[in-house]
Length: 258
Ligand SMILES: Nc1ncnc2c1ncn2[C@@H]1O[C@H](COP(=O)(O)OP(=O)(O)OP(=O)(O)O)[C@@H](O)[C@H]1O
Image (cartoon, rainbow, N blue to C red; front, side):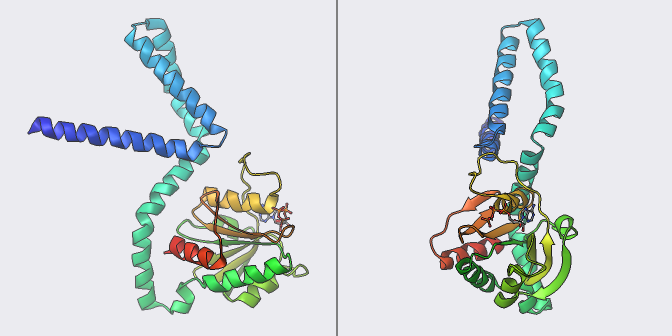
């Protein structure tokens, strides 16, 4: 019986390690960190080999290096570790969030709690036509207080004309990002952290880099209307999400907010 238990646990152990390694690989894939990740794996394998071959000196040097390296890793992979923890946190909290939302419906007015995605996308469609640049951030679970404080605080229930007029080129509020929480615009002119990802094509400037940056550091969703091309982009978890039609985009955002 014990043997069977041990085997099941062993399999579970291997599956979990494989999942962990795959998650780390997925996070660092396409970034400069992939080379560091491969470097660490190589050093670890060489260390294990020197231990196996009883090469005392080299093994102890590499052992020391790996010991100190753990702290260095936390510094080097700070952003990736943050993203990883966020990824775990948001999947676990997904259901709880839905439950809390349902509780909120009972307590609050649904017009305040359910984000009017259609109104946001309709505003984006209008802004596309006129090549009006826009950067809209929708909060999920992570607090956006640290970016809200960089802009102007507001409390406006979402509707398309308001969004369009905020981003209207001559509006004093058009610069920076708009922050949305539930069904309210809670800040405008917010300054977002810009991503360091070198893989973003050069044609994307600071507006897009800021959208990628905030979606890397938090679980917020970002919508960008390009002033240059009129293109509408949807960014989640630091990546551009592909969609064919506006209806498909609305469905995707609905799902991501659920
Ligand atoms: N860190 C930031 N946080 C919030 N908004 C920003 C940030 N950086 C730039 N922006 C906004 O993006 C606007 C223009 O940026 P830029 O032209 O470099 O972006 P872009 O990605 O090329 O977008 P577009 O395609 O609209 O030109 C700025 O005027 C500002 O409103």
